[in-house]
Length: 144
Image (cartoon, rainbow, N blue to C red):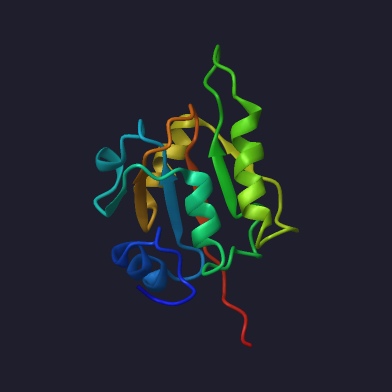
């Protein structure tokens, strides 16, 4: 274990976060997402909820300030509806470290899949919320 790093962050996930460059994206995927179909760099975080992973990752991870929205979620397909409480819970975790972040963008399903193909990694979680996937775009870490 390391001081100051959540025990929810596996050594593999920590390595991925450290190797990502600005503009790279990571998908935190719900348990239903076909991660292995779209990306060869899949990490397992079974049993973990995305809200908890967001709270653990974002103290270590600068969101991209040079894009319209460094956070993206999948739109509902026609005929489906979104549960607004999912985004609300995610934003509660996100706002702990990023209170002024741009609103979450909504991305059409197949466009989301295309971004997942190009993502640096996909983290498969135990999240069961429908449309619970979120993409984080990494930014430049400020010099302290």
